[in-house]
Image (cartoon, rainbow over all chains, first blue to last red; front, side, top):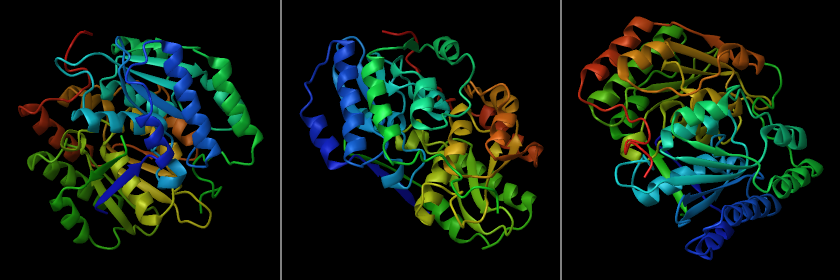
Length: 196
Length: 196
C-alpha cells in the first residue's frame, strides 16, 4: 500500500511518437483513436477502448491512451482515465482547463462509461467527441457501462463540456463487434458471482 | 506519454502500517477513514477525503487511501480510486469480487462523486459505507460532485453492491466544515473560467 502505476504498452508509446504534431480534422483524430483501440485489443494489451487528448482548435496532439484494466490489475484504468492522467502529467497540472491554457478535447471510440463521464468535469476537458454509442457498446460487447446519468449530455454541457456524438460511429462499432465475436471476456466486476 | 503513478504520502504509509490487522466494527473502520481524511487535509497532502478497503465480514484491513489530486497532478486520484487501485495491486487482481475471494467493502468519509460511484461496479466491491452525504459535502466545501445518477443507491444495489449511509456522519462533516472554513480552494475543473 504505497503507490500504483499504469503504463502504456510499448507499441502505444511508439505509435504516439509517430503521430503528426497536429491533427486538425475531427475525423482524423477519431480514426487514430479507433486504430489504437483496435491494436490494443489485437495485441491483447487491454480492452477495445482508446482516448486521445488534443488541443481543440489547433489539433495539437497531447497523446492517445488505451484501456489497461486487465494488464494493470486496475479496474479504473479505462482509456479515458489513462489518457487524462497522462495528459495532466505531461502538462504538469490537475486541471486541463486552468488559467491561460488552450481548450482541450477528448476523443473516444465509444461513449464513456459512468465512471469516465464522471471524470470529465474534474479533468478540465472542454470538449468530448464520441464514436459508438453506449447502447451499441453494451449490445456488441457485453460490458455493463454503469449508471450513466439519464441526461448525461446536458449534465456535461452545464459544466462547460461540449458533446459531439456519432463521429465515425460505424468504423468504431467494427472494433466492438470484433471484440464481441472473440472469446475475450467482458471484464465486468464481481466475476465470482454471488456474494460469499 | 508512457506511464503515470500515484503514491500515498509518507504519513499514510506509516499510518497504514500501524492499523490493526482486523477492524471488525463498522464505526471503527469509519473512524479510521475520517482520521486519514483529516490528516490529509491538515498535512496538505491532498483533499479532505479518504477511503478504506476491508474484508466485509472479518474486518481484515486491506488499506486506507487518500485523495491525491493536487499533489499528483491527477484529477482522477480521488480517495476511492486510489484505495481501489492499491487494493487491486496488493491482491493482484482487477476484480475484488473474483472467484473464491471474500467480500470486500469500501468505507468512505463522504458519498462518492459521480466518477467514484461509477468506479465501484467495475471494482468488484460488494459493499459501500458512507459518512457524510453528497449534499452536505457540496454545501460545506464547494466541490461539485458531478452528475450522480438520481437513483444511485438502487443502481449500485442492482449491481450487487450494498449501500450503508449515514455512519458517523456528524464526525465526517466536521472535516468538511474545516475544509470549507479554510482558504483551501475546491479544485473543481476549468479553473481558467470561460473557454478560450
